[in-house]
Length: 185
Ligand SMILES: Nc1nc2c(ncn2[C@@H]2O[C@H](COP(=O)(O)OP(=O)(O)OP(=O)(O)O)[C@@H](O)[C@H]2O)c(=O)[nH]1
Ligand SMILES: [Mg+2]
Image (cartoon, rainbow, N blue to C red; front, side, top):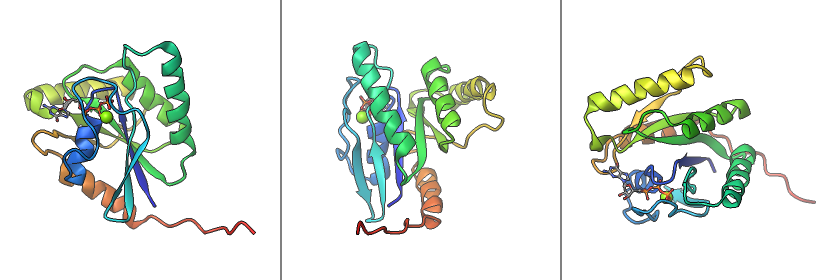
């Protein structure tokens, strides 16, 4: 079945956004402390597609070895997973462009993986400020990408952006074909 991976810096609001989309409070575990999600968690939605919650990247209080492990584990998943339709890259809308986010988008581009940007926590500042940060992000990745990826402005607190993201996913799911089943013998 088609799946959509939600990724971004630790504490950006991945698990909260997933709960908003699934309309299930507490389905994905959230926390004020970064580093809450540690595994690849699949949540089946409407019996026909998966939301995938991933551990965050860029958490400062993690050893170099653990960061390396994360990189291998997550990047292999993203690169090899055939049912993965689109990577949803979450960006904190309060912040100026962060190097780690820009580099991650560049890596997705190099791998030819399709992705969209999801700006989170828009309730935390004015829409003018959010738009300014998005414009700056556009500029930062404009050096690599000719076209700015599709993006969504969201707030898990205010339930903002839910219909837009679900509409986007629904559109892709309609065109999803189940790969041919290959019996072993
Ligand atoms: N105001 C506001 N707070 C939010 C929003 N989304 C998440 N938060 C808060 O941000 C913190 C982190 O949220 P999580 O959803 O656990 O973040 P995460 O990206 O899954 O974090 P890790 O699993 O640790 O990588 C929590 O305290 C949430 O309540 C939002 O849209 N608005
Ligand atoms: Mg999480």
